Length: 290
Image (tube, rainbow, N blue to C red; front, side, top):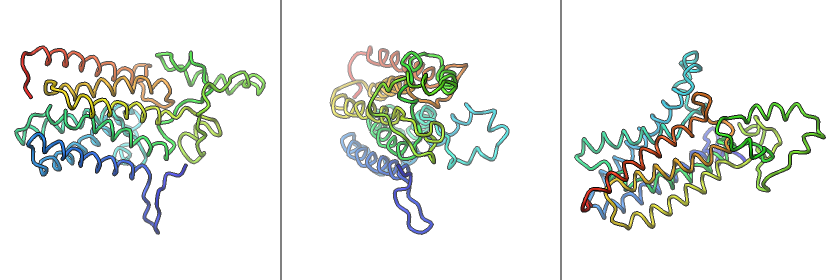
């Protein structure tokens, strides 16, 4: 796996950048087609896509910085050093949502109508983007011989077990068998390979890509063609992504932490609960606002 897709002289195009460029341009073309059906101008949609992308990036970075506040307090110059890594999807979702509210208010549009239009495409973009993470060797999982009782504990006990595993003799280590045959060994130049050199890992980024793509299929080809109340598709997206992230975070090795628990589990559960309540409330209203 090589993070660089194309290099001409000093110019480098990474797979990560390529994946997100593809996701953005595919998403905006599909969004413009949807805008035609809703009677919204393509110019408004193009401007909205830029605003949502920018606010999403800012939200993703701010979220990551806040969850690593002690580090950035001592290294404030690194706050803007996004090329060193440090984005969080939950912050990106929140930032994009805030950007959508502001843009919709300024343009006198229904923010949740925009949300319904863009929600399936977010899952598609997130699925495509995870292949960039694969090329970078990041957003990686734990070794494939990690016992299931370690993987599925709600509190993160993996690193404690991994320290214990490393203290064992080769004979004792051999007692831990591969649980799946599709583990990936990443180059030592990547974050995954540096942390777990020459060990097969759960491809957590591909797990998430697959789950997100299934969610996209459901929202885009099924829910989009039904007469749901405005906002239902957006909040269903929140539920789908929250469930996906809860599942995948069991396998990830480097999640952010909150009070000794995986932060994605806490945040995803809260988002899922809020979204479910809102869907029930808006669909109790009589009639249809579409």
